[in-house]
Length: 79
Image 1: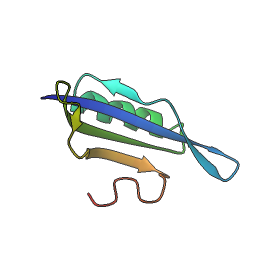
Image 2: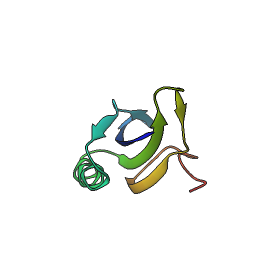
Image 3: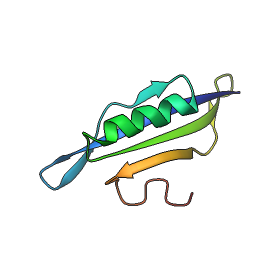
């Protein structure tokens, strides 16, 4: 298994939140830094990590590292 670090940003279009293309980061710290930067110019941003097993195509539950701004309802709420 390997760990992926991802930043997902959202922008407001009218009253609707629209997801940008996800961005990958090389570490958890880099993902948090990117989300902090982008959170200042986007409606919202979330950085998370996820364990991935490419051989079996399985993904563990995402682990939120940082969140800022307005995010879609229910996004990673259980964490």
